[in-house]
Length: 166
Length: 198
Image (cartoon, rainbow over all chains, first blue to last red; front, side):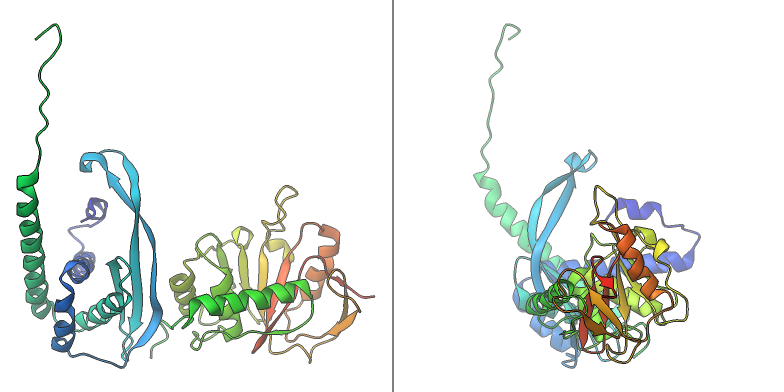
């Protein structure tokens, strides 16, 4: 979560807090859809009440996005490099707009995510929560599995203490 | 659909904006000649299809846009153009790269826009006007670069003071305002080099 955003939220202002909560939840599910295994998306679309009568506002397009970072998470901001991102926007019959962003150049996936995003906005957050949580658990498990596979291959480079003071 | 519904852009952005660019390029090269241009299928109310096509083709994050407050459906148009082009919206006409002018009664005041600087004459505002056609207005005879034989040009409706802005370009050259006129299905242009009268 972007910390700059947190500074602007007035805890006294309930309306603003609700908007921020909505935005955060949407960010969470968009993140989960973008990172989860491909095969999870199609069944989700069915579960969410697949609506095929949608209009493509922005056809799927691949482009480059600058990834910015801070050294150690708190240093000076710098451009870490560009990554390929595919995006798509659609509109449902009732006017709800959905956006899909995914790393890489998978156009079909960007469109599926945009449709899911639009459908998710139509359900209560209590219903959306378990769906997102299940995906997040799976993504975490996959990341952990990958890390535990690569961790044993880590090589430690030791430097002997040298010099007059040794 | 509500007024704030987002409308779709080009279905095939690459070939549509290439075709749009060609039409505007031809129109600029041959002032007063009318070139067909296909816009996107859906547009917010107040914005013509051809106008939308021209803006989707030309505008991007580096071209500040000013929209005449007289244009109805201002908010929908802004949302649409911001979403599809990423162009920043400005309130001050002088700072704009493109200015979308309404059909309203308010006279056109050329001084409000940027005519460029001697070092950077390209930093002038390009005016985009929506007209109903190129035949029914008061005819003028255009001359200048790109016009082999002077010909009649009669766009309508135009805001009061429009032809003064075009005439004034003669005094300003090489600075001045370029103008793109968008009809119901075609586009014409009056670059700053064009003169009125034989």
